[in-house]
Image 1 (tube, rainbow, N blue to C red):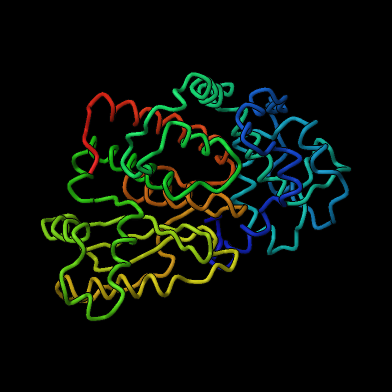
Image 2: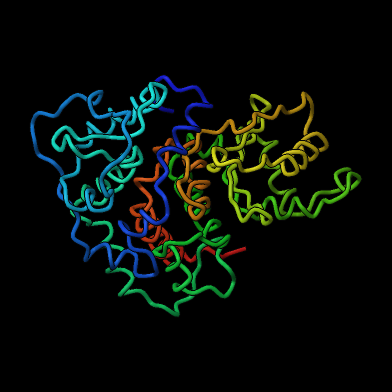
Length: 366
């Protein structure tokens, strides 16, 4: 949350900092050659000036008067420390009536306030080791065995390595990819015994299996086998259950945490600031399951109580939902739009490495 922001103001700030789709398409190339095109793209340099005007002098209450795409592409990117200061001050600046950003180096040029997000995304691309991560993803893409079977838990049964290529596109990832990403988080937990003893990360299958219990009386009977296995783990000492949820009617993913120590259910929705309806039905289903399968006291619902990033489009909810889980389970940094392209490449690499690990270990898939 930005400095001095209430939750309501923070959501308003996120809306103001969203980059319109037409600006995104002019600055960041879409399509399945997303990573390849970015590698070949000429990106603006980062400003190396030693002295910059204080961030308070960058905000203006006058309307924009310059073409943002041209300015972003042709001028040096403000340094990262300055961008962090601008983001922290942005909430108060909006309250003060400011609507544009003005780089004092170009005093006659005012840009919409979402230029801050554009600079952050450009900074991400220019600061990740000279695009080493994107280039690594591209090399692996060219070298991968397209028709090789995929062994990552959660992947569709007939999936091949080609299934992972969707991560490099500018589109919403599939439920299968979200399950593979969740499995990757589980593999990371296994490498951290202290966390692994307390936390379990599940895939989308948990809510799918729980959905088989459709009537109230179903909860008084035996749970599906998959759910019974999980119930046993939770009774044996796991303190937190984390999992993604797919909402088909909304074509949307979000994350859920059930804390068995504090007796709370919390979810994190990366489109809450865009008016996404609250998941009342899913939460009621979970509360019914918990009330029938676990001893009292009852679990309390904390609406949108998980720390989560705010997406600036309608495509990255799956990736943000998994990051929400990673923040809670593993202490990962919170997702923000400036990491969007980098994260796609990073996930592509991570899942290929998990696939290699699964093949080496020859772990049977349930």
